[in-house]
Length: 98
Image (cartoon, rainbow, N blue to C red; front, side, top):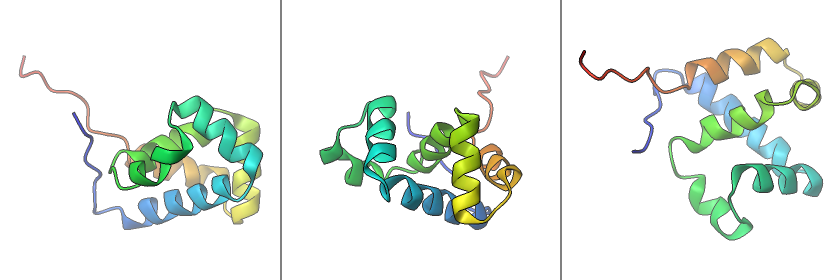
């Protein structure tokens, strides 16, 4: 099942795209993302069209404090802003109707 983003948070999506740009701006960072995400370089571009992909990008950055801090510094934003975007782009909790 594909996740749908809350499109009311365009700012969060925009920040996630900036984070992606930061990742692909360095071969080592990109290689680590590809390895940890399970994607291969050939499918990376196609995956970028998947709505859940931006959340996965933020998941990757949020998964390592040093990576988060480096990214925030490079983008000139507070780490809390990336964390807030990550939180907003999470899928809604599963509701099984019980």
